[in-house]
Amino acid sequence: MAYYRRVGDVPRTRHTAFRDEAGALHYEELMGEEGFSSDSSLLYHRGVPSAIVDSQVWELPDLATQANHPLRPRHLKLHDQAPAGDPVTGRRLVLGNADVRIGYVVSGETSAWYRDAVGDECVYVEQGSGTVETVFGALSYRTGDFVVVPRATTHRWVPAEQSRLYAIESSSHVAPPRRYLSRYGQLLEHAPYCERDLHGPTEPLLLDGDGASDVEVLVKHRGHGPGGIVGTRLTYATHPLDVVGWDGCLYPYTFNVEDFMPITGKVHQPPPVHQVFEAGGFVVCAFCPRKVDYHPQSVPVPYYHSNVDSDEVMFYVGGDYEARKGSGIGIGSVSLHPGGHAHGPQPSAIEASIGAEHFDELAVMVDTFRPLELGEVALAVEDPAYAWTWAGRGPDHP
Ligand SMILES: [Fe+2]
Image 1 (cartoon, helix red, strand yellow):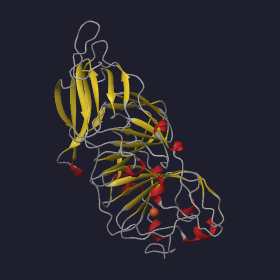
Image 2 (tube, protein in one colour):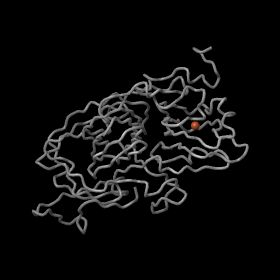
Image 3 (spheres, rainbow, N blue to C red):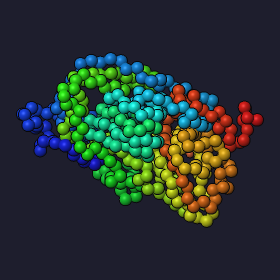
Image 4 (cartoon, rainbow, N blue to C red):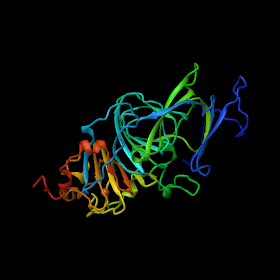
């Protein structure tokens, strides 16, 4: 995030003594990316942010994966299994590789305090509303939000209602696509969204009153576990949400998919026009309701494509997905179209789409540059007939 934000009280000059009304010093913390060479914020704590009194193993949910071998496109009926638990510890792995893990949970429970030290999290709210309480302040969330939480941000989820959360956990940073940014980081006019659409915290959130002590924070971090990830349960002497103010360009924010302004054309536009974020080894796109191609002979659904460098994951969250007619895919479905296999519409969808002026589809796509493997949810909810729907027959569907 290249946009400076200031919340609460900060001293006039950085790195100078900053005291409360009783004369007690605040403790300054720099949260910065890429060493000291990228975006950062300065936070002012009432307690010491390093003061831990215990460290124990946190056993993570199952992160084991199985290769997509023999290779085939997959259809996962995510709504057939609704992983329960809280929005953090209840997440179950759908698909993953070394760059990104996609988890899913349906929950109305308040989560544990948590931070992901592996990478930024980009959680798509399929349905629901509530608050994400963070060390930078609170974010309200609602259906259609991408909630972007930078690496190592202490936070918890407080759903106001049952929430369906599709958690895209990166091993890097999640940011607007570079091509949409000016050389100093402002979103350019041709970008499909702008700074006004990004919503960060507006005031401090102080939960360290009344002598709150011995607060547990679950930390997901790099180590020798499945996927190179392990968990630790740290206990803090005082409550970590004790920041009276902060400023800088690193903070959590939300972006609602309704604020994405689709880029359309005379003929079919390729998936990069739908891109919302980029990260190390993958991108995130949103296919939103839109007017479609206005050439009189245009075919609005995609041509077959062999995206030779990537695996493509679509999560179908709204509308009627034109290109997938006849495939069994519906709301709540996830499709995985791997590199090495050309994919595109089911044949009947092509003719049916000619002359269409509007698509009401809504889908979130993650395109990865390394192959994805199948997590426990994928293995539990796969529709085994999907791979054969283009041909109309297969080994178990003659
Ligand atoms: Fe595709």
